[in-house]
Amino acid sequence: MNLFTAKWPFYISGPLLALLMVLSLYIFDDVIGLGDALTVATEYCGGAVTEQQFGDPPPLDWQLGLLVGLFIGALVGALMGNKFKPELMAEGGGSFTVKTLRTVGCGMGGGFLVMLGIQLAGDSVFGQISAAMQLSGGAWVFLIAMTVTGCALAILLERRGEGGASGKGASGKAAAKGK
View 1 (cartoon, rainbow, N blue to C red):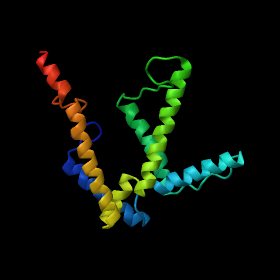
View 2: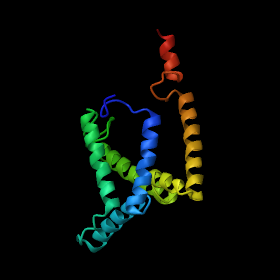
View 3: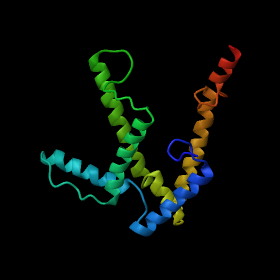
């Protein structure tokens, strides 16, 4: 198995992820999550807007480093997988102004939803898993609700024919009949 290009089986990646979380709890004495890093970054940006000048940047602790590392890692992964497609405008018809407004609206709306979800959950999913390993009741309620909601949404999308690459959804059945 090539470690960088092959898909890892769940029975290897799951325990490795759990060991990584336990190791991070031991090293950092804190659960891994992005809630604190996003809060610090948001407060810095909010202060820069209200004061109309940039102050001293927030200290680079491990959580902010994790946030920056996630961005860099995702960019490197997309570049290595030849899946990176830089776009400044959303696809679809319309004038330059409509495309620009759609792009800005989707970006800001997506960012707002991510931040809202992290604030409502108390932390990112990774942080919730780390907290569940410490037997936090709230984290277990969150993870159970997330699993039930994800399963229900997957069933609904599969019935609509918008499922994954399995080809068993409505679109896969229609394609099979056309053969």
